[in-house]
Image 1: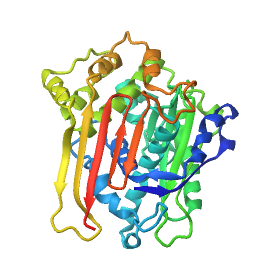
Image 2: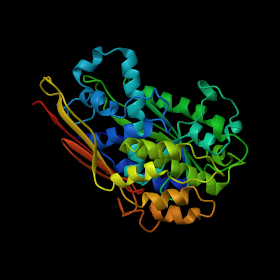
Image 3: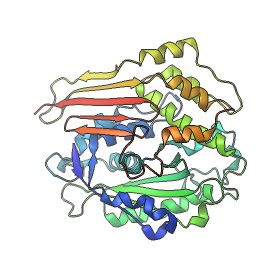
Length: 375
């Protein structure tokens, strides 16, 4: 399900040397809703099993019916106006994550993301947080990730359904929140991003918009002085792999890898090895037939996953002290020579039609969503 949308970025907020790399964003005029929902499920899920996380399928079962099918642009259906404000906020927040990460990955070849707090935990660096408050200016970025050239970036995600000016206001506030981490006087993060989506209600005259902004370059030239650049990069990729393992349903493997801490040796258990080998052939993760679906609503849904056997060598590289990060980056990223190509063999791939979506990651994961509606 492809829907019209506008993507913009505040070029004046970016260092002049970086504007050229973000220019492709303004060429985007449609968003693949099904693929965006897969990314929503992927990046919003916790990198550890907590016992209280939302279902990975929340994004499809709850949010797909929220979007209007009768309009060419991305907007909410008429009935959504009467939904409880709390539910509206949840949708805005989670689609804010899914839409911004999908756009950065699908358009600019970003490699992946991991929750900022978990990244610091796995590197034994939580003491570097200047303020552990979860709210306001003490809030850390949502994610730390890698761009298409392997540069470390911070990403704060926003979402609103009211007015476009509310999105710009939220993005401005997000910059203030992100400064808590990036102002730490040390320096590895080279790019800072705050992005978000405005999803209009059905009768709103404004159109859907995704917008990005970067604070002044000087705010991002120092961070995490005690973090080894090689270990930081490997931890980000490792976190992305963990999220993908969980989404695929390889829970034992994901749990073992998520408990890895820098400096410790790592090997998958025999149980996890068997689990991963079972995903070398496409496996159904979730399948459900809904009884007596309302007209126009989902009647059947199936989600499947496949994991390439290169996962074993990749995880070995990501947990080894001997691995050269440059090798990982070259394998997983878009290079300067191939930057003008929408995709290459080592970048993410997305496929969309009206009733399905598929994404393939550079780490060797394939996720497919298929469903039917009671039309």
